[in-house]
Length: 95
Image (cartoon, rainbow, N blue to C red; front, side, top):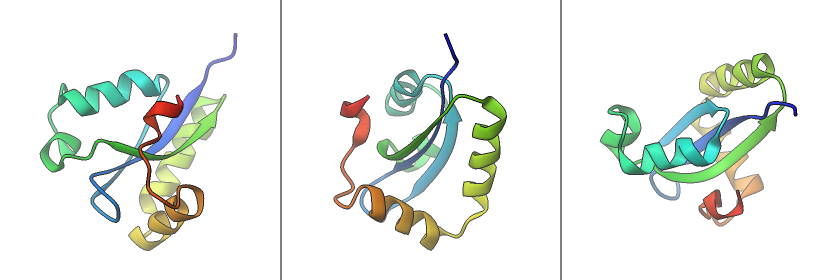
């Protein structure tokens, strides 16, 4: 069975604070963000809404994409979310 990796963007609200991350278990990682299990940025700023994600079968490709996305300006990230999730719905239910 191939491995699956996710590069994801969380938001505090529409056009709010953004967070880019990578994981091999998106449902578990979302739960960790929402429960505040790991202290840090997402807990401090209430960034818990899954607004965008991409799926990879190679960890190196996923890590490369995460690094790319973190370097992009905020406007680029907002446009990416808007193009794929116009209403900024929480996509956690679609997992």
